[in-house]
Image (tube, rainbow over the protein chains, first blue to last red):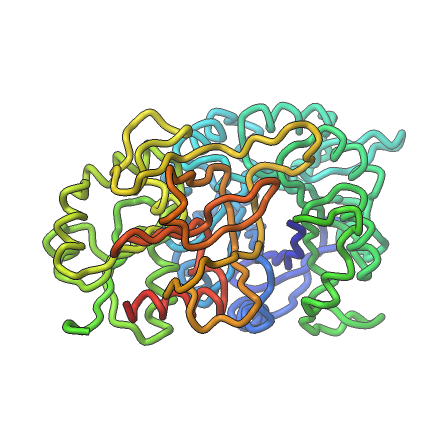
Length: 256
Length: 208
């Protein structure tokens, strides 16, 4: 059940890439990028609009409709979802899963309502995590670029008790750095999580993907790894072949 | 074939109508979206897409006017039905996910994946998985050995009798991932999200 997911950040209808959640730089045109991933038959694609929540902008449904019409693979969207109506529209357009983050800081009822209406399999919660100077994982509130004092593990337990079907965690410290994943965090989380766990942050090689799976991730998402190539970070869209991917799956798992 | 193919993707707010419609259009298959039973009847094939919870799905179908009789009437006119994911589950008798009755067209119930502690698989079943077709099932024509589709579900169909099972998959347990009963077909996976394999399956459906 292992998945490899390109994770694309959108800002003003452009694909951008950040480093440690800062300094978005232009990568390319979303439709072109998505067409390429479509041709490569990727497992799944995640799109995050980083502009909606910070500026309380409306969700760009028109653009998302265009994007969804190009995709014959599973799509997840996150970015400013704050109502049942938002969710409903996104499903109608063609997204399989919607991802909540910012709204959770002010309205946990929305999460329960969405799970109730649409089923847990359609609802993902995303938590951006940084480590305090003592190493404790804490929650980063991306919409406000704010390091909170909220303990990430406690926050995750609370969110999962409300029934979402997937947890997406992003390491703020490793974002865009291609310095390898936070395996300790993965080990810690996978010890108590029973829904699919997606990890993103720092992936730099196929080996990083393999160790993330072994440490407990059910899916690995990456931005830089799939869109950049070489030390000068030239834009090049890549995705491993099915055979290469098969070699990354932990050998202890045989029948899934 | 004594009628030209025209597929209706039923819009009952059961889910991702857009994706199914887009794939059919891409394949050049004549299709339209509707929630009007008269218009729906005016098609050769009907697809019930599905994202959501069982009761919500059933309420939406009832609201639109689709019930057991409507579908029986439809298929008795030599027309075909395909339920996708939740769309497959609502064709059954009832579901552990909800309290309402299903359309009861298929003698099956819908159960939740429950694993004992020795099986460490997360639920929902989310990702790509293989499907093993039963023999001579036309939905899986033209596939070579590699039959994989995208699944995203916590509940699965459990038929009373195995004769309607047209495809099985394995996730902690072997379960029915496709059924065929007369002109009514159901698939647990999402062909509209399964690239070329999904296109092959929808093409096969359109050619029934």
